Amino acid sequence: MRPFPLQGTRILVTRAASQASKFSDALRELGADSVELPLIEIRPPVSYRPLDGVLKQVEHFDCLILTSTNAVSILVQRVAHLGLPANTLTRIPVAAVGAATADLARKNHLNVQFVPARYVGEAMVEKLRTVAPGKRFLLARSSIARDVIPDRLRALGATVDVVDAYQNVPPAGVADQMRSALNSALSAATFTSSSTVHNFAQVAELAGFRMPPSGLTAISIGPITTATLREYSWEPIEEARPSDIPGLIQAVVRALGS
Image (tube, rainbow, N blue to C red; front, side, top):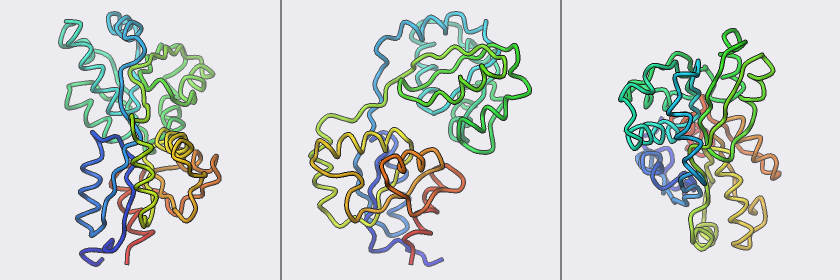
């Protein structure tokens, strides 16, 4: 592979501002011009009361399901904020969707026992299929998320408590940033979650653009994000394999590399 296979390309990065830098830096190291358009801002849930309530009685659950690094960070922060024992989260088995989520959980001394090979909710259900019947799970997630995990685990005979740990919302003023970005010569837009796709569509309408934007290709982090793009009649030109940031970088190289 050439040392700068993405030289001459301009890639739109739609991750949250707090998470975009490593992805952008990796693209630049490959020669791309990275254009950051943060479409997700992590905000507190409407109320911390439900989350705090389950954290105070987390020992009653058989397994904690974490679907993002954001969920890991927020749960650790709330345990500290509430003054709960340091081992509050370490005593319960954890199921983590994705290597990054599992790695951060382990760094915080959580007992990660289940990590599916694919980073999607369906794979998590398959991973837990044999242990699910009769068990009680706690799923801490974004306020806007698919119900695949709780619905299918319940169908297997499990009890699943779902609690909002945070919100994914478009940042204020991002419509103006979108106008500037989409009026430049972009090679492709990258999407790292269904939330980035939905927020892109919401902001595009405010900014006066149709979906999908004319002439702009999309590159997806995985099958769920791809399915969301298709809801907007936007077929991605590449999909990450595996569904993580290194996989997405390789997908960009496959699609646009010279």
